[in-house]
Length: 267
Length: 310
Ligand SMILES: Cc1cc2nc3c(=O)[nH]c(=O)nc-3n(C[C@H](O)[C@H](O)[C@H](O)COP(=O)(O)OP(=O)(O)OC[C@H]3O[C@@H](n4cnc5c(N)ncnc54)[C@H](O)[C@@H]3O)c2cc1C
Ligand SMILES: Cc1cc2nc3c(=O)[nH]c(=O)nc-3n(C[C@H](O)[C@H](O)[C@H](O)COP(=O)(O)O)c2cc1C
Image (cartoon, rainbow over the protein chains, first blue to last red):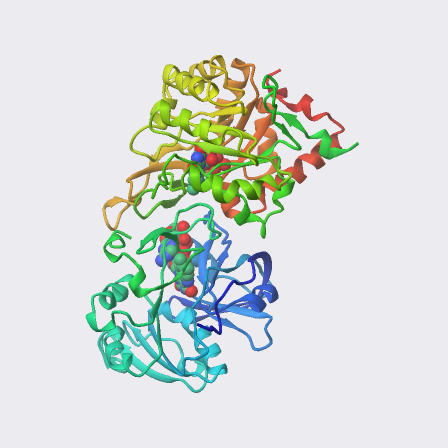
């Protein structure tokens, strides 16, 4: 099948990226823009970078590529400050330099033949899906974005790419429909060509149990602890129906029905 | 002065085949894959040698997730020797290595003496392989491996079994999780090991206070990185003054200064592991740092080896 954004990618490079801005989006989440022409030129939606953080953070931290600028020189990250590395990163100032390696991983497999797709974002799972939405729109594909968060602390709608249909969910009902974002998938499954999901593991568990989704083209992006990001250390290996795979190298995007879900429960 | 040749070291002086490295900086096992994965982010041909991921007779799936935990100045890993197995390694990787300038050493691990010997026999004569590193020091597998490295007698038996099965230079990699690492080193040198490398990781643990259980799926793991450097350095100092085969030092080396400390302590060469995970070019940066040091101080590399013991 022809694909717009898959196939063997450009090999990753290590580079120094200048920080352009780092601003809070909601309480505890940040939008970080950096100048990284080589990564920007090679990046495909669903790929990520390994970012060296200062302070006490020893290993690099994996962060999805959230957006690539129109000019093609800058990339941005959307991240939550939840620990040593991301706290340090949230204090980045314009003019600072970050040591990044990327683009890494396989990325989403978006088909040329697709006319309409559904993106399902749980919380910060929105990060890689915005880049995918942009690329899909540019190729004339109709995009539905189902976006769920716990509360009304949400990404600014005005920042989303133009021309997408947004379906909003909150766990507490303060914005859009009350409930879990995955609930909308069965309603769309008959009318869209592909579904792309990114969010916390319970979302994937929920989807994997729905019988009516079996055999559909549903791609998910997984998170595991990583050390190298390059496929050399085997820290991020998971079980799939085709044997062991490395999330950093063979993923982070997998087909929903490819993962052996009961092996993932401990993560 | 040609600094490239100035840094060359012979790691198997008593072996007819020898193991000559252009420089003393080796990519350690388990943090550099099979080498080819790193070619985009590291000038791999600039390295002294590459040691591939620990290899067993049959493929291994390794341990449950999570397999790593970051700890102060280092990390715990419990990969559990996930690897493709020796047959796939020969079929897919050795051909690539055969075209390289940089020598590749295969790290082998087994559950019995016979498995170690069988691995050595299987790898004998395979083009692209310059030596074997016997891993008797992996703390993350249920049986075998580190059990052999914990005492001098069993360590010597594994060494003899492998030496009798191969003409390749053999390095024995020691574990710091032994009561008396000097006794183990003497035993493997006595059994014919061409060189000795140390240290593998130290057994350790980290606990998730929210879940109230160990972070690692395997509960315990091996500690590596700068946190272990002083321990590793002292062990290298002790072992290199007790044996007359070349010692390869490692454990927490991040920079050329760190590497130099191990060389001054008595190491003929160094292994760089965890540093590569943080900075893929760490090992080649160390090569450059050592070249500059030797040139700037107008000193012969051989004079540096063990200088801190004298
Ligand atoms: C492929 C991939 C893409 C990601 N993209 C994003 C993104 O776009 N935005 C975002 O906010 N987060 C993203 N994450 C999660 C992010 O990497 C973690 O939140 C981050 O590593 C936490 O680091 P810390 O130092 O702040 O936390 P700490 O808890 O101090 O980290 C300790 C260790 O655990 C690891 N760790 C902790 N949480 C996670 C996690 N959820 N996933 C993987 N490793 C973890 C860290 O890398 C580190 O090694 C992604 C993870 C992966 C694997
Ligand atoms: C993720 C990881 C995997 C490793 N795998 C192996 C292995 O397969 N065989 C082996 O002999 N040592 C293995 N090691 C140990 C390293 O080669 C090295 O001896 C140890 O980590 C100490 O050095 P360092 O602090 O420079 O990493 C591994 C280490 C790490 C961190």
